Length: 100
Image (cartoon, rainbow, N blue to C red; front, side, top):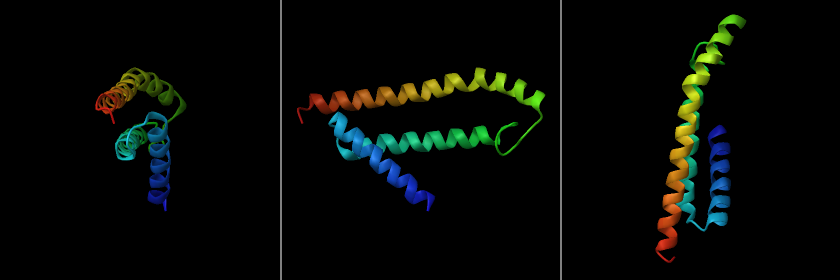
């Protein structure tokens, strides 16, 4: 059930990206699928950390952990999104320079 919902979201977003950017559907789908998979892996990792959804802790421990996570995960998320944006731009430039 959840796989079908995830696939439907990926197809819909891929279609919109393809329509708005002019990229082929399959290139858009690949980009969206990779982004969704990386986001899922990162979310699962965060949920399993102390204080995460799967591993709750006390209020004081939570405050300390939040400060630590902010320092650690913000650059990681910015880096992942930055890489995806660069990939999207490069694919877009290659596509438009082919004259398709």
